Every structure is written in C-alpha cells, then in structure tokens.
Image (cartoon, rainbow, N blue to C red; front, side):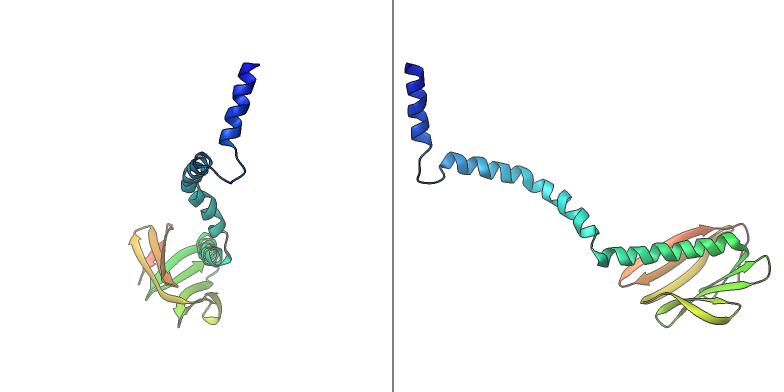
Length: 155
C-alpha cells in the first residue's frame, strides 16, 4: 500500500491543471527537432509533382523521343547550320531547326510542325564519327543530349 500512495503523490505533483510543464515542453521540442530534418524528404516529392516542373521535363523528354524516332528510321544524318536532316531509305528528308523562338520539324521542306516553344537557342554539332549532340536552352535551363548513328555527315 505504501508504494501505491507514493506513486499517487508523485503523479499529483508532476501533472497539474495549470498547463504544460517544463518536462513536456522539452519532450515536444525534442520530437520536433528530430522530425525537422525529415521534412525536406517529405516536401520535395510533393514539389516535384507540381505541373510547372513536370511540363518542362515532359516536353524535353518527348522532344528527345521524337529525335530518337527519326534517328531510328533514317539511313543518313546530315548536320548543317544548326539543322538536323534525317534522310530515310526512300529519300524523304525530315529537318529539325530553330525558327524564331520555336523548334520546328519539316518534311521535304514543306510546311512545318512546332516541336517546342520558348526555345532561346538550338545547336547541333557532330562530336564523333558516329555521334552528334543536340543542345538547346528553354526558360533559362540548358538541355543537352547525345545521339549515335552509323552514318552522320557534317556539311
């Protein structure tokens, strides 16, 4: 009985109806300080899901895919004046080039389809006998992709 009485007396002195004690404040502060470094890991994936970040990356990935698609269909690649010319086995020429602030795709120099908007710079260069690089700047970000093909000619 004596042990129960002493336990009851201790609980009455630490838990009162006047609010938080110093001990509960320190425990809450410790828990907060331990979880604070993990907040960045929780917030970053949510920020990456925002539409502004994803649209820009999606357009760049789609543009790279379209160049790869034309590259796989072509029998010869011609690089001239920051233009990419893909020549397929039937002699059809598909050209990627910059026009004002857009990157366009032409087929046999007739008409065009806009591939990307807001492109400040579009450069192509041959970097090896079987590789070329496409470099462009969009909305202050620079993107660069290297492609390979067995038949690349530079004019």
